[in-house]
Amino acid sequence: MSQTPSDIARDVLRTESGALVRLADELPGSFDSVVERLLAVQGRVIVSGMGKSGHVAGKIAATFASTGTPAQVVHPGEASHGDLGMITRADAVILISNSGETRELADMIAHCARFAIPLIAMTKKADSTLARAAESVLLLPDAPEACAIGMAPTTSTTMAMALGDALAVAMMQHRGFGRESFAAFHPGGTLGAQLLRVSAVMHKGDELPVVHETTAMSDVLLTMSQKGFGVAALVQGDKLAGIITDGDLRRNMDGLMDRTAGQVATRTPLVTRPDTLLTEALGVMNMSKRTVLLVVEEGHKLVGLLHIHDALRAGVA
Image 1 (cartoon, helix red, strand yellow):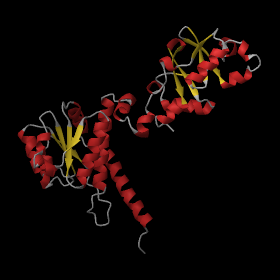
Image 2 (cartoon, helix red, strand yellow):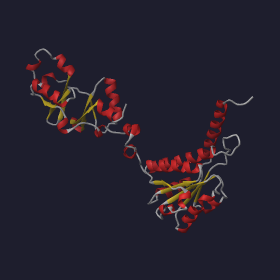
Image 3 (cartoon, rainbow, N blue to C red):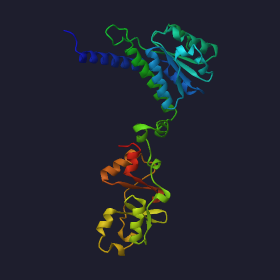
Image 4 (cartoon, rainbow, N blue to C red):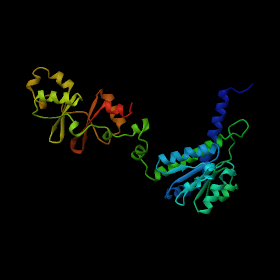
């Protein structure tokens, strides 16, 4: 009885996951020295390979670049027709070849030797041409491919990509590349939005609906209407002393216009900090059913206002 597609899928995933476990157990002994070498590179890390290895090279280079290691993918065919000029003495090169005998890599290997450019091989064959030419070798386990005929690059490309991720994460942590750096490199999309701080989108300065203890409620209503946030921030000097919301207006409807801001305000407003993640601030607003958070610094100094629409416009859902 032939296997179902689901049976085949499970076999593939088990084969590849088993190879990754083996890769972790047999991590190349050169891994630490390769990380040190790449951290010391003054230029870029050039990553290349042919065919499926070329696609893996593109992913590895992109991961390096987005985590603090300047990197570029160079196609070996184009390299032989002028793009070798993209590779300088300040760079290091990672060449990926399962067999280590990919003939299209020959010119890049020769270029690295000619100009003393550090060459790192990622291959399954320790005695291959590529491995012998390299300064360092990241040797992949000789694990079987996951396809039925054992020839289509499957397990080998999965291991190469995973080892590239391991390099990128190791360098990322040794560089101290944190959330702020990641956000700077990923300003677009949901990923960038999740790393934004309140300070990036909050309203400040003349945009703030500020009133004082003795401000007449007629002026408070005017301020709330003009600023358009539905609240007014009560301040004493530059310190936040309270907030006036629509709820406060309703609770003080009788004789409202005979009162002052200080008599109507709620004295314990919900606040956040400028360095709070926007996602966390939105969570607070959702939990408390608020649409506005006042933003304060050390000493309860009022520095901004965050409206729920600001978070939504930034892409935080």
